[in-house]
Length: 385
Ligand code: IPM
Ligand code: MN
Image (cartoon, rainbow, N blue to C red):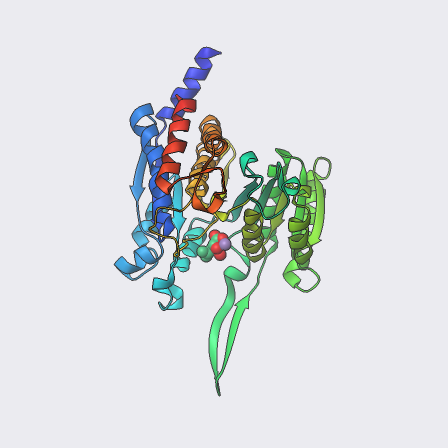
């Protein structure tokens, strides 16, 4: 047994992993800095074969090459084992042409890497149970996985345009489009995840007003009937009622599967339930390597944005970005122990009473981004070595 463990550990340590870092804009830069310290420690002190490269996305790229991401950085993302991304956007780029805005860089990346499945785990850390705007009894032990479709729907549907109609009138069009295969593959991801959890999937759509909602509902139902009927409980709920249920009684959910736009909105809302948007990570995944049990391409990023109002002040919470690295260990590298230890380090530091400004309350210790990052790293060191 001991030998097996050592061999397994050696394998994980030795295998080369190319990590492409895209800090992006605003607080993205600060949270990435703390996350890099963990990667560097593992590489330099524990011998993990991590090879890091850094690129630019969003406004940071626009300022240098007049595009929200360069072709070269797209290729580097395509050839990496995993991409870590901070955040994009900010008021500085509000007037740049629509197709060159910072967000377009992120959307282009998701589409180029074909990352159709966005996993947003919503968990409540035990020591933050009083930080939520909801009663603590409603969020204690909260553990939801939101599975958001990420490369289809209204984000990418054509036509997408704006037209001058004259006489001071403008017409803007966005198009919500889904095809069966897009819904099928995201449904499979949701059902397979549910299998490893509490075996309950809730699908959210607006079939009462949208044709895409009707197809969504029908497709999820038939995938369930054909493959998961025995083991997984499936429930459908209209997205508006689902939003209401999420704040009314969030613990009723296990896995939620929904489209690109609803997933965007519902995940911000669910994140806030846990006390702060600064806590929640995400994984955007493409094809799965069945043999290895890991994902071939992926981007890991916090659910929060670039938060220009607090950028550069050293007060942003780095937990969402660091927890995104833990997801990278688990989903891209198959390093479950490392993921577990990093998540445990975050939880322990919170138990010890350390708080960045967003989660500070009386009786706890207010710390900077750097202090939070370093406290998590030193806890992680204890657990991993
Ligand atoms: C997110 C963000 C992005 C999205 C923006 C920055 C394009 O809000 O990842 O949730 O809408 O998908
Ligand atoms: Mn969002």
